[in-house]
Image (cartoon, rainbow, N blue to C red; front, side, top):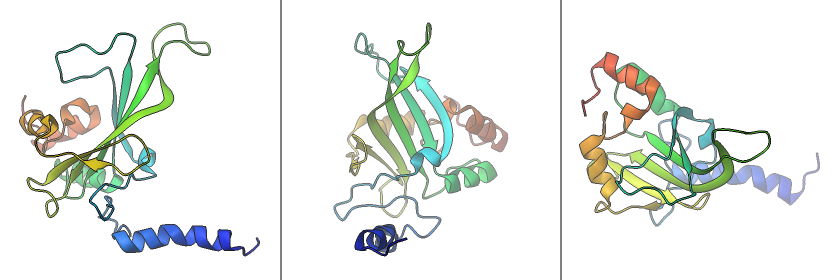
Length: 190
């Protein structure tokens, strides 16, 4: 291996980011820019997969004709471990909602839909009692760029507060987590 500036600098960058953001602490998953945007965790697809939905919507209006969307939900591993123990999502939990286009035509597919590689958006639901009034916040991003904090006036806050089955989360749509919450007695009836 050659010791060029490129090889030495690149390994140091993640360490520097961890040191500056506090992300070295296993309980700290969410990292922020100086202006409060959430840094998209680069490994979120390696987190615990909770569920996928096809064309789910919380609005009465139908989706745009000809457009179909898959959503995938992930949660960080530490939060999942604590949830399995307690039936509650701990402070520090980070959920990622990944939205991808659905396609029906490709390769050998004759029926049904599959997810494309095209990432439409990322949304985040973050539990941080010290940082956010009410303890939870929502962020959105078009991809790898930092996710912007959504104002509390956005409908997602009131909707999750009213309809979230466990700790303002839509655990009712995550089959394995739902069963854990039922057993723990933490699932709120709709």
